[in-house]
Image (cartoon, rainbow, N blue to C red; front, side, top):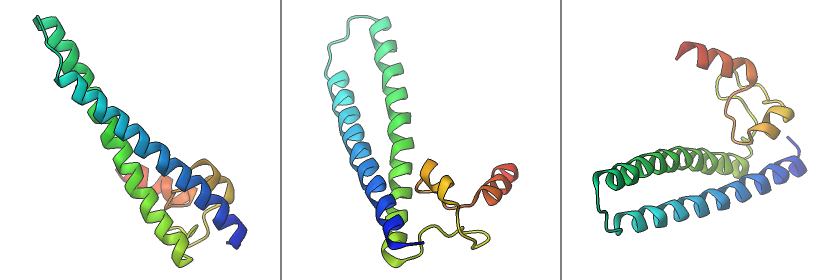
Amino acid sequence: MQNSESNYFKEILESRKDQINKNITGVNNELNQLSSLELNDEGDHAAVNNNSMVESAIVQQQEQELREINVTLGKISTGDYGICEMCEDDIGFQRLKVKPHAIYCIDCREIVEKSK
């Protein structure tokens, strides 16, 4: 992969990383505010618990994406970016445009998903 392409994806990944960190901070602030509310009835408790579960699931998913992005940024710095972890072929540019932190080419991704 050319240096200009690596820099292009690095900028995208850094931007996404910043956005995820802002999202996680915002959700954690919301959860803290929800926990400090005075709830008057069971309906209020149920609504807050439901919101908390949804928000927590979103945070978990975004934390996973953040871990994947950090691994990918490490690969960019070592020059290993854009190589499929299964077949060791190049991951296509178009695939990386859709998912810059992809670790598998399209063919290997399908194999992994079918084996789950």
